[in-house]
Image (cartoon, rainbow, N blue to C red; front, side):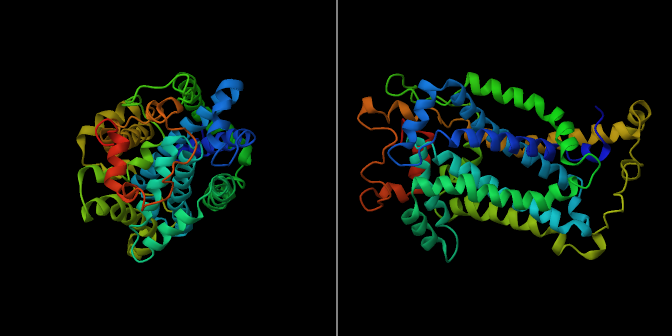
Length: 388
């Protein structure tokens, strides 16, 4: 099936939308078997692996699809920035909702990490209030509110109700309302973009089969450093904490909080703060590749062989690839040492620390001051054999 030209420019967004549907379907199935209680959540996840292998595979597919979804959304944003979509003054709302969709995506990752409630989830739950405490003025109060209000049932409601509703509203404004008006509507859109998404779905299913999350403790426990170099969805959350590995005090907060916040605000405000002379209407085409590169004789031979349209696609694809490598390279360089699969090696019944049950110092920064030390929390996550 031939993909229409207007689809080609946004196929990363189409793949992200297909992955969201997969997340919705698998999430509904997992919700049927999940017990949102501090003393039962992890046991309910474990039971999937001992009694319901197909549902356990869906659980790991759900986890790996989150990683691919984050990548697809990031690539879609990169391509939109390179195409200067923010210059369309008739589509300011579409641009704004697209940028704002990053917030519920991060919310899904955060709550999704916490819900299984193994030791990794507990540790991360204690780290989140420390991060929001960096927000000026309201940070400390907001941090204390999160600690006081946290229960597993509330986290579950946020993950399966509040965030999906917010995402649906933003996606409807951003894309669905326009797609419904096209010939074939949503049905044809998903069929066409499903072809692009299919290879990714196959990879997700294979990863879920080959690299499931360890949950066999205490019968089978992983090695302490298991997970080094293996990409996980947690990587996209840990990147905000990584500055605490390399910087202290204000500079850790600067790179971990203020820089991401500034990038989000700048991206969201681009079409609103740029001079009106730079903006163009939806019907106006951006300058063609031929016009922009007419003086570049190096591409003349390529245009002759590939044709102008194919050359534009190749040039655009290579550009997106190079920017994506520059964007994701630091993620890998910083996060690959993280042994995100090895927590159960120490925190299990056999070692005297029961998985899935809050410790005595749960949410208590007085009994355990390390809980409010971002540097200690992150260093223990990355280097548990050194910092403990």
